[in-house]
Image (cartoon, rainbow, N blue to C red; front, side):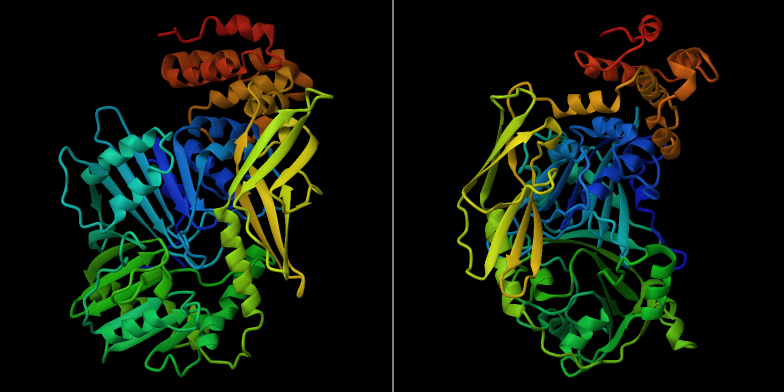
Length: 598
């Protein structure tokens, strides 16, 4: 159980539908968001493949997969918390309708912090099924040590008594933030009829939302025999450890184990942690894996888990919440953050603290385990705390403002555009901080923050709802980056997706590659990504009638896979009126295979 050598989770495999089912719709929540990581999601949802390997780039296969997920996926993230990409991808523009920024609350020190996927699957003549994946990991490429739990559920005919504290309310509240997401209406109706099945060795799953509107994301007794806490962050904004102190009261005489980041434990100090057996991640293990896999990427502990033991019974709480007062709340006080945890119950012998520590801590060779007993080091007082507070307050004020972009055609050239940014409730800047705003697709487009900002001579690929915002300290030159998703208003008839298709499918060979891509019965990621190149010396006719010709593939699809023909027809409909070159021989051939209009 949670053996780091054998219990690795493949994110992409978890997103695959059950045997015989197809994805109907999905929603996800994350604190931070990486747009490149989000581009990899269609690989799993549409190709039924893993997320491993090179996925970045402006791929024809990604264009098609994004099209297949339109109006079927919604991702909720904390406003402003999009990672600044190293380079811009034109496909980012097609992700905008999927995204819904969420304000974290009414104060700067709260966070929208849940991390989950809720996927709805359907199959002919079978009950609707759901999968809930609750993670400690954001929707990024971060490679830190994380935990995830996957629950499968089935929709029953009647309502089920819900032991899932605040979960239904959290999902409904999120979906109501974008009522144009049609699948959300069905999800809201079915939530109360989903019967969730526990993973092996567990029973009685409970899904617990936390936050000012939902209470504490915990369900545990006041008196327990032992407790194991895994959390990368432990301190609150003033340096206290209120959540740990409350856990200590729930285990007044038993064993208390604490696993965290070394720097976090050092910052708290051994005096405040008296009574806890403290462990930190083994730096040799981390650095070794970094050398093998990660280059210079940072890796550390990011998992969140609370295990309480009483007699022969154990309860796990795992999910997004750190063991801080902001995330978990304290007695009589709800948490500031919005969080999601899952409670699972099982036998102590199988899932208790001792069983976990046996796998994680090598007692025979203490330096070889994933975690080692922490050796405290003195740390100097943190510098720049006041400045960081200024950054956080200003960031909150910036994302709270209303950002609207208005695009209009340039008078001198109708193929070019001008953008005007209007910001309502623009915050007053502290004297020590400055703010610059730039268009995410356009390098060197930085402008000083103002209530109205203009950019000129932009092509259609440079029209984006995403703005890069940089906060700079005049004293220390420290910077913080936000990416803010604005409300983008385009002139009538401006179709960025259509223009992108024209640019990516600009030869007859590429058009026929698109057809071959759609004819794949069992889509393979590597094959799909190979369709971006043209056919080279053989040309379009060879693709139609040469080795493995499209003609034969169409014949096979007509007999066994009519859905492929439907996909092709939808693609052809999308191309109508574009400049994409369609071979005349294909037009003649398609007349014999085109699905009849219903």
